[in-house]
Length: 344
Image (cartoon, rainbow, N blue to C red; front, top):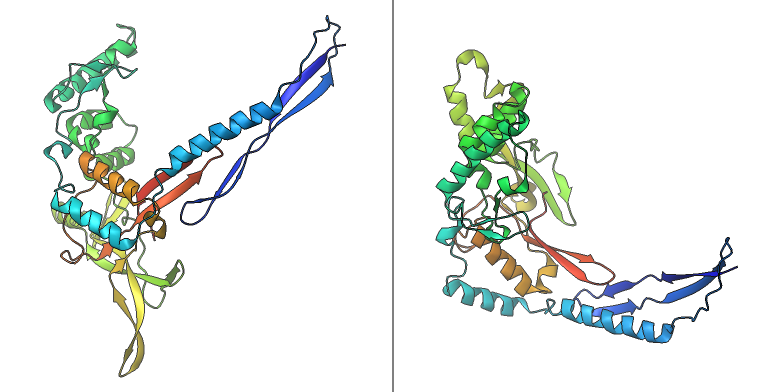
């Protein structure tokens, strides 16, 4: 009988304090277990692994990995963060570059990210898109065999927000091939108008206000949707239902609703509830790694995903979303995910 040796890695865990400093770290260990083999084979001498050295090596490796991760966690005071943001503002770091447009040049690559010379400009990508439609028909009819050489990919390093809408003529052809009018209409809306987070927001009165997180009460305020109002004005009267209308089975209204904060105020008549703009504060975790937050915002501006419109005190807006940082703590590393706001 031979002995079958199984080496099992133990669990690893990282715990951090609120400021991102290391609180507890358990090093993985290896357990060796011998079990009987069912078949007769020539016996092979077995030398147990030097587990102390293996554990020491694993501990050093994990410490190095953690040290590399913790470089990104450099907590700073709000005063220091504001000073650094002001310096970047004066240097024009938050100004949208000309290359942020979805119509700007984007290099092409192969499937394995090798650079290609063509297409590059938007008109060239549009030409390639029409070629893809032609090749697709040839593939379906068996005239050509599909290969990866037929495909060009837009470089991920040069991502531009809004690319779907930039190729509207191509999407019109594809949308027309969809199964039914309702699907066609919804696809057309998403490509040409994008997605509005308040499209399905129900009306909530002050009387029916809802709690949001710890100390905030929310209701909604009504506003006009300019596009739906224009579309409403273009339709014949028999397709209208007051301020609403139906297109391919989907109902729309010229009004939309957005969250607004409700707070109690003292008046001569007593305490009353009043609406005010809902400004969501930044997550408290953003002070743990402000450099990461700032870099993410600069990257978003570079791609055209967000646009700087002015200082908070200079811009009137009915609603604002804060920056949220989510920590994803893995056994061997800590990942951060930066997003704009959590939906109320």
